[in-house]
Length: 128
Image (cartoon, rainbow, N blue to C red; front, side, top):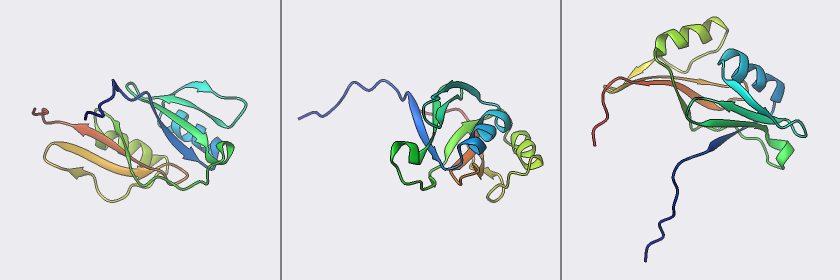
C-alpha cells in the first residue's frame, strides 16, 4: 500500500520568536531579508530568502509555548566568511569556527531568541 502524496515543495518554514520587534530588526535589517508580509493583527510576518519563505511569528500569539529551535536553517550565501564577518561586526556571536565539510562551508549562529541558523555555501557539485 502506497502512502505517497503529491508534495511538490516546501512553501514556508515557521520560526517562533518571543521578541517580535527584535526579530523584525534581525531578519529584516541585519540579515537583509525582504519583509514581504506583515500580519498586522498578530505579531508576525514573512521574510523571503530567495527559495523559501520564513514565517517569523510570536509563539504566544498563536497559543504556542516558546522554545527556541535547535535545528538550524541553512541560509545560502556566496561567501560564508564575508557574511560571518558582517554579522560579527554587528555583535552576533557564532558557535565555533566555520566548518569546511569537504563539500560545503557552514557557520552556525542564532537569532535574538536563540533559534539556530547557519550560513551555508556548497562548493562541491551534488552527485546523484
